[in-house]
Image 1: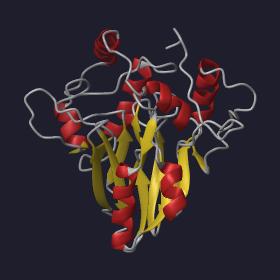
Image 2: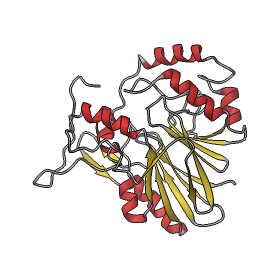
Image 3: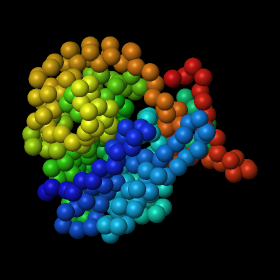
Image 4: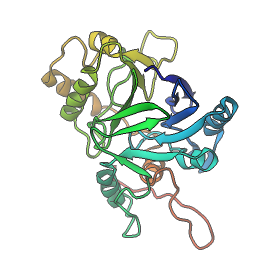
Length: 287
């Protein structure tokens, strides 16, 4: 089955969100939505999410799932905002518990912050399946970028989050807590074992040198043939050496501090104080 896929590109974070529809009905899923956030002012905005909401309403679709490929470190999730307006269940990988435990400590969240994934409606494991209308989706656990990364295969499409980028850009970084370049290489092999014609939809694009336009759709065959980090039969040893060396030069994403605190809560802000004000923490010398 070939799902209908509509992409929404967020210029501020280079994130691509997707609406994935059962071609035989009106049921759909939203994958990796974005809540706009201006770090300098501490203000949120819903422009990106509202574009998805308007599209879904205009088409008369029914949202069944709000899927997260992982706990993003470069943008805030708008899943609860969209859920409040369109419904649907919020899903993520069950290894979110590891991420919550790790960053619960980094942000000194205390015992009131639950580290059992209960903020989400569904925790997926390798081999789980779900349905969007009559269309089946399957879950691959593809860690390495983070411990909880998933790839959702829906019909002939695979939504890989940050695990793979476009072939001319390569793969995700692996230097966040719980990341592993060796593990990422193994995860990529699982994706590349899908049929060659499988459409791959990536979570970000930054326009590789020499490319003028943003892009987000490729195929398994193209990744195997052309991916600059893992294509053409590159070995695990080669990849790990390259990835670890490259990651050592990278700065932290500019929204990592607010993103982690919000996304490990399924897109919810930390609890408000007695005056109703919400605060985010900045850990010093922790990341």
